[in-house]
Image 1: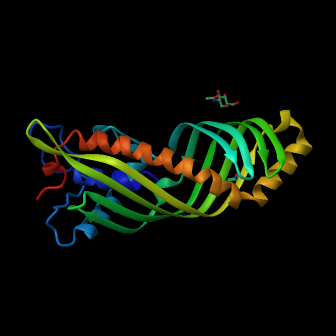
Image 2: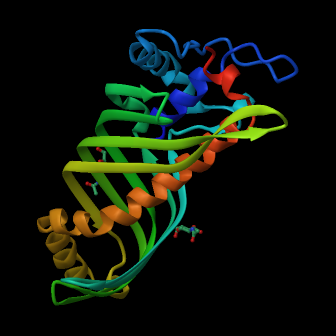
Length: 248
Ligand SMILES: *[C@@H]1O[C@H](CO)[C@@H](O)[C@H](O)[C@H]1NC(C)=O
Ligand SMILES: *[C@@H]1O[C@H](CO)[C@@H](O)[C@H](O)[C@H]1NC(C)=O
């Protein structure tokens, strides 16, 4: 999912920065006065797609195939889901297959809004979980995997212009991500200390109820991904003055 934002930033980071590391030539630069700025940015994103998958070392951007989330900790204590869970080394495959729906750059409000669809994501990682889900006790530690399809995502990047060494730079304050999942299947290995029968029924139960589970997990996942994008985008924005990233 990080493509969208990479896209926006990288593509704009392509101007000729004197004294800066050379900006890769595969990025299409957009001028902020372009009457079709949104279209231009959208095209840039499309053009940069293959590079997003493998990463762009020149810009300090890691590849997103897979997208790696080092750790997510969830401590849910209300409603029908009361669990403590921890996920490590989560690898998400498929984000570079995004389909861009729309890109809206609002220079005056320092805001970029991107809508996209992800046909399919495949996730694998280590988990540990303990608690109750809809009254049922759950406990386990092993490998979790999941497949998610037809994901609609909206990303809103809100920034501000800041002054540094007499130059204007862009600083991302908030990177908000909102998504909805069309369908999901999940599997947890080694539930209940490896008890096959209990594990099988719990997995069946989790899949039958994936929608309510996804709703509970969504906010944490959205925040984790949003914070990661914010960090990466600021790496670029703090490196190149705004006039080079988005020339007049
Ligand atoms: C994840 O699980 C695998 C297989 O059990 C293990 O080799 C690996 O060390 C685990 N990673 C972490 C971060 O615990
Ligand atoms: C996800 O899809 C892969 C490949 O299509 C499949 O091997 C795997 O069993 C699926 N996992 C789940 C949890 O549905």
